[in-house]
Image (cartoon, rainbow, N blue to C red; front, side, top):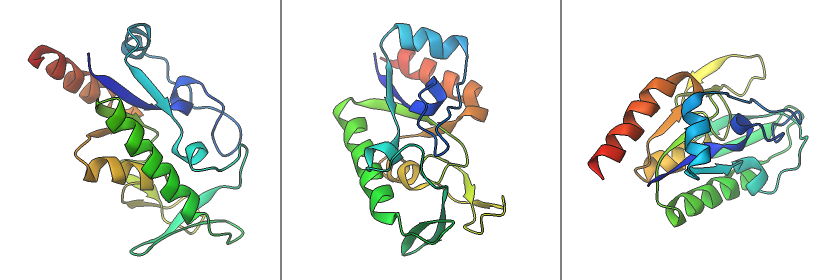
Length: 158
């Protein structure tokens, strides 16, 4: 059975920047967890950032620049976390990923615009982008039904 990469915060790990989680309780997730199909990762933790940590947002994508509200450059940690996440995804042959929406690492469709004002922009986070560019579909917690259909189709095809 193919594994599914999941943002650790969605599974209750207290790895968010503020030391909290984003626990997502859903029967499909519980079933996949019981089957040993979930690979839980936090790209920001993998990249060496502490918990808690200052909030960070993407200032520019080309070249990539991620900073804290105070202006500290955390781009190297975000890039290292994205690379480590992709490496784990490949090692475990994941079919897809469920990642936290709007996160500067994990957001698949939108991230905050770098102004620290709560304004969103259409772009993926650093780790999600790395997965997508390498052919791994990324879903967020608002796309659970789509993810479930994708995983079921993968399972039926196997």
